[in-house]
Image (cartoon, rainbow, N blue to C red; front, side, top):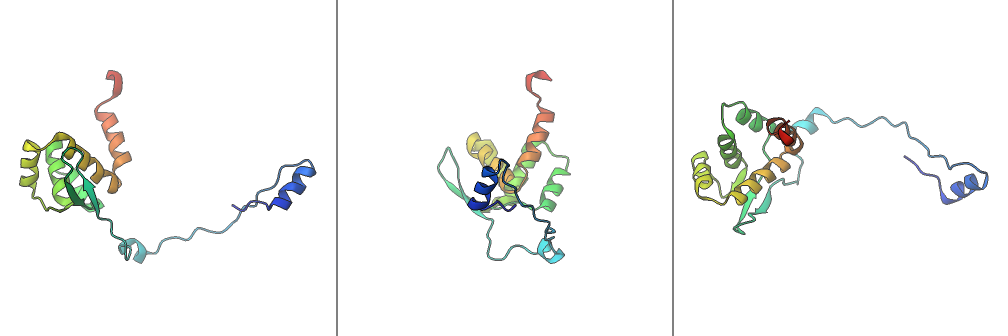
Length: 142
């Protein structure tokens, strides 16, 4: 959207009218198939994450849509899905599903919960996850 210059706005106000905003009619630039299928060059989506309770730092990455679908299509409880999210998304240190399970059994709940929340956020699952949680655990006994 193009806004009027100061002089144009002043002239409009002096004439008793609101300054007009110009609208552009440019068509949006659509992504090409190559852009959709190719990771962005020079952009690393991995990030360091500090576990809140222990202060330890781990390296994580977002999961792909295919990874999320495979995990969510398995007949798993919440703990099983969480183990698989951790084993897929943790880059350093690398954990297997079994290692993630042992960590759940011995680790701090806050560290693991915050880590899984961050993996969901960087994987673009936050809004979807909030809607699912609201359906599964409605407020006020709804």
